[in-house]
Image 1 (tube, rainbow, N blue to C red):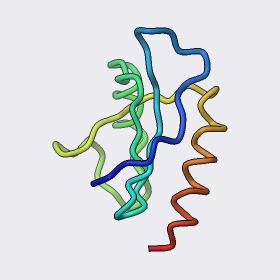
Image 2 (tube, helix red, strand yellow):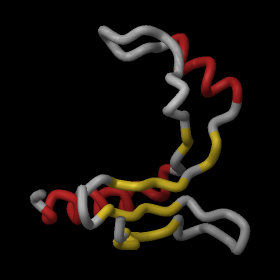
Image 3 (cartoon, rainbow, N blue to C red):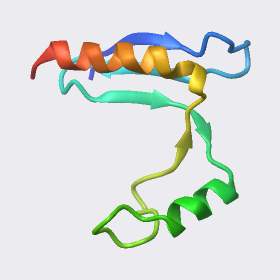
Length: 85
């Protein structure tokens, strides 16, 4: 799974690193973000997607992406779309 680095939180220091990559084989966007706190996880459980059971499946997690990473995510989306797999 070769990853294409797209970008990192522009305000990150040496200890924080919300980052985006694109998987070059599948065009999936891979995100490193902050672990969501309990309050955020609870809100996600209490606000399920329409047609889905409430809860967070064992194989999934909730992450929080800082708004300042939005330009990087746009670039990741464009890169994934360009891959046209």
